[in-house]
Length: 325
Ligand code: NDP
Image 1 (spheres, rainbow, N blue to C red):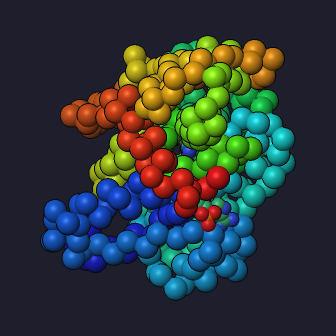
Image 2: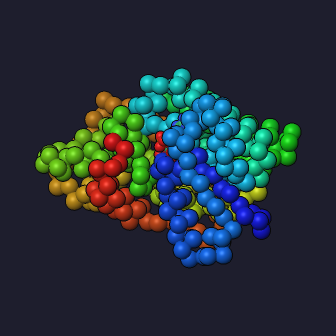
């Protein structure tokens, strides 16, 4: 980033990842007054502009004139929400991404970091997954709408780079969890869904708690504050159009059952966990390699999974009233 004052606009700034970036930036600003004086941060939500709408998107950029953009805004959902709404996930995310990246181009934004996801990789693939495999085959049928819309961000980045020299890049996070997640029963990802439902079970004094599916699928989970730190590092130090996977190490992959047990411990839930094996599991695994990240940012330390789950459950209990339920 340059010596002049940078204006960094974060789309999707009210969401899980956006709020984590805000927390990390606020901490940085407390510690580093010089950096604070050189950066101005704007965190936007859909209330500032509906980014599916081109005119509203253009007006947002006209108002703030950002020099840098972290593009997080997306229609995001868990397995069951995705399965029911592939068309909407495709159309609305395509519209958001096309409007935002085009506004970045028209406003000479120096750098854009957008978010893909490890769940958009081909279903039939060799493991571990790496950054070169994004377009190598069909995504899992459960979330093809979201997956293709995300893959097109990479196509847009390459097009703007090739034809106009833009530095628009993307990160590929694994599953994210933390404060400010979406805890709605129909839309939530697995961690917030379990955090919320188990809290309900604690409050109701339920003797058993049902996890949907077998509990056997394997996943990598990154704490939102860790992802936020890594995204700031990408914004400031990573200068390639090629996507970069932001994930915990392969050996830190856990089963859904491990997740449920960690959440049980954090809630101090005394009942028994049972599995409804009639429900869909989704992809069995999607192990991603963070080799590229490890080669470029050698000394990054991830928060231990159980500690991050403890902090996330604590946040939910303390903030349930205002959380997205
Ligand atoms: P959230 O669902 O928590 O937040 C979504 C954000 O997008 C909110 O700020 C929301 O604003 C905004 N938004 C949604 N629709 C619109 C719209 N039409 N116009 C303007 N803003 C809109 O998402 P996350 O923080 O979890 O995800 C951030 C990014 O990371 C996304 O691109 C997602 O695909 C990606 N990602 C997420 C993973 C995860 O596990 N959560 C994993 C891998 C990638 P509002 O609050 O007003 O609704």
